[in-house]
Image (cartoon, rainbow over all chains, first blue to last red; front, top):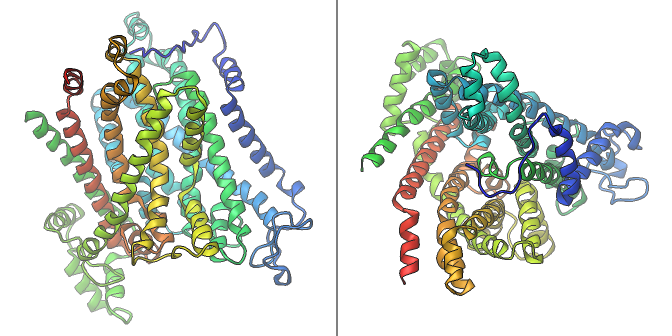
Length: 296
Length: 314
């Protein structure tokens, strides 16, 4: 199973894996860039009220479509609202909902993957069929269909995306558990009569955390893209709430008149996704170069 | 042949599951389906008699399992119900839209292959050099690019500023350029990354080293030995991307006002046209299952060792 990767992780109890990973990420310049992008944009979201000079929702049609200036660093939109303030508050909604959706997918994916992989047999069979069925439909399409049933709104969009994307996550975890389960030390622990809970917590979980961290990080980018796409299609937040995908959709209408309206939210989504991907890639190279193909 | 047969049988549970999912979606939708149907199919608020007729017509008087069996029976005969919005059979609309989606998906996926294979292999061969870095950064950026933003950027540049290409719509050949480019970028980037890593793996294999050791030219080693073997997982992967392009071009079709499956889905969702949504879901599941089936079978048929043997003997 060991491809000539050259990356060998020390056992968990010799060097704390987290410290090891952090140091590795800092050495990898691309991953570091990803980390910087993610941190900067997240800080912008957190300090949105401090950083914005105007209210994001104040309408003033006398100053609509202004190009970027000192007063309005990113210009104003079709209702004269400050694009800078809307970008900052939009970051809260975009990044916040990305975190919520990713957290949900991680919890479901880990639970299902661990259960299927560890219990095997009928449970694994049923869960695997379910994953197959759900992933037989492209996630964006399934998310759209679920939104059609649940109705429009950010919360429903998040539910729909999570319901459509968890199998990818669960499948990778299941694979990792299966690979781990066959190893001698788990075999030995079971033979020695260790209770299942102990085997789970002491042996399986620590070895699953690495791949899980990688997929979770990559999943962040996928989530932001999916949420933005559905918002762009007008299914997510309702006006006047600021969210990057919805802002891009508004900017599309005024493409020739005020291109800055779509340039900034688009760059923000692109940069943030790039940040997540660079970070996830760096983590993957560090932890296991082989899980990449399966996780995409 | 037994393998092919076994593999064919394996898609049956998936198809059943997808059909059930599609069936469940409509039944989970808020409101009484019979009332919905009557309201959408007539131009006035439906009377109780009309609702009862609709209930009869849709078979809603039966228990849910019976309804599912009936629905499956109809679906198997190509009858996916009547669209609320167009009042036409869903299958007719699907048949009208599928070719239009394919007209974008096929050129886009070919373009993606054409970009990704050479770039990915070149990047692997020149590992660590400047060219490799450029390809890697480009592929990473391409994979992170939201397709809807790329579409707007292309429209802004080529349609609004330069005025070379139409903004949207389907007509002459020039209307195909921007949507095809937009669709091709993401798979091209992902495929290039994939090609690079499988090529790197292949270049480290014994048979490649043997070929190098016996003095074969680098170019020959790369194309004859490494690429041939790297190609198999790449093609498998390409198959799954093709499925996405056929069914998942939702955003791009919607931006370019392209009358394909993706735009049909968005419109159906906006109008709460449940039978249409259901039809698209079943179509997508079917397409995916069949493409995966074909990829698996062809993977099995193309034995990697045969490819190498031929390459060496010539």
